[in-house]
View 1 (tube, rainbow, N blue to C red):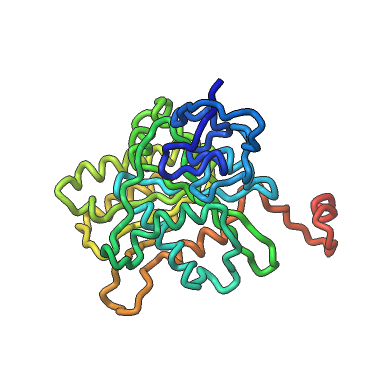
View 2 (view 1 turned 120 degrees about the vertical axis):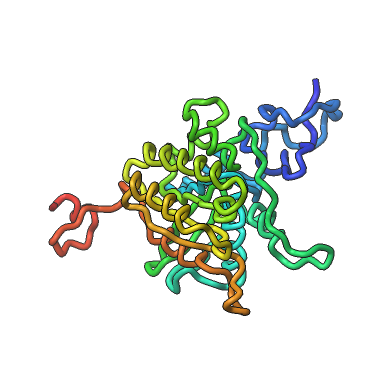
Length: 320
């Protein structure tokens, strides 16, 4: 007999907490190794026992099920090429919330089951005496990995709490998904395409103005076409990152026209961490984009409107 010891994965705290890669049982994780079984009579918990149903890191699909216990969370898919700024966008949101900024006065931060995950990506943007702030590193691509989901909860005007899950997935997933939807290497992107409630199409102005801007434009157009075929009426925003970088007007117009042609209902935002016009700036466009997200609702989650004065929503539904 043998038992599993502490996972060698640097971001995992199993068996005390859940697997960082989203495995429901430690024995199902390939990262684990065996060691001799301890003598009988010890009070160690069994391999598959979990003291807490979440680890604090990015959530996997098993953890997402836990978050859904109260109500269905609103899933936001950040979709874009490699190095487009998706992780930086998430980190900027977290740092703004941590400093007391609100996307709207009525939206109060109400908790998170993935604070460690948020801290891991936002630490790169914070001052460290040992190193200058920098952008978060590239999100690693692993075809067998479920999409990393970062959780936030907000309380609104009616004191009702709403849960949000934001994807943190590598751009390679989406490129392969755009080329071949059914590829075995696109499982994570395919899951987001099927289950997300809203999409942020992230357009990298740096890539669209660089030496490989033609290839960057082609990859983005492929992704636009894939998203258009998957949307089925769900909201989508075109998010221009690195607004401080100039892009040729014809290139920008070509991308915008392609998005509007395939998805006429798209809304548009621009973001940047740098803002030379305002020394005390906290970034541009981040709060406006988050405010738009927080106003969205599940496509099937609204009760029908009625002229009746009944206060019971079930009666409103029945009297329509």
